Length: 328
Image (cartoon, rainbow, N blue to C red; front, side, top):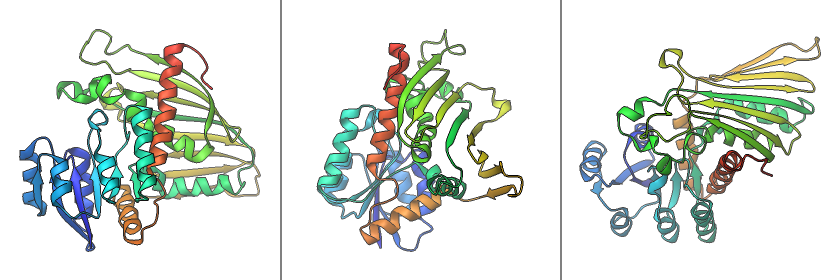
């Protein structure tokens, strides 16, 4: 049995709890939240004990793993204390708001050799894994141009008075939301080498409580040779829905990925069109990977260092806009 505790039991934590409770080799033993009543509610539902202070939870419980599901501004020493107690860490993105804190997390986890995983669940999707395989094997040839869209509506968070609308707490659209897209860019096409970004405010310009950027476009060069454009907004009309999509033109094929479906259009007319579709539960998949790695003492496919590198990238995007300059 893997004995699991939670720090933060809000929305994203509930997604993991729904999956973990179905696993016969997982025991949910402790829950910490600054709102004690919320921790108590979850403890009553899943069993285990409730705490207001995660430090007390660490001291009193014998944990094999901890899920850290708190907003980015709330991160302090919870990863460091877990590492010192040799507790495996699953941490949601973004892992911090500053490079300094993020890389100190990486260093302490490496020092104590604990298993870590960051909640970039899109990396585990079968179509993404297949695209990564095709790129790495050279089956698409040289990579040319990529564009990705991240279109959604986050405006309801304003009416909920959420921390997300405050850029000093969330880090903003690029750092907190579109981090998934930048992480996939790194995963598929290598580390960016140059960035130029534009940002815009047009919906929330007169609202002092909504300090997050409304939209941005970033242009990037990557180590694979591909040039990329990422286009994102968090104020699209709710009636439109959302769109998280990718488009790649390579030497041997044109590729489209959206909503769990990968389409490959080959340049050679003798090679048939290929489509890969997946309806996976990605929260279940990433949680299962983490638990298996904890049991075997093996590093996960998305260790905490990947979270620090993606944070570095998103902060560079913001830096480019603030300096109105290419960032290398």
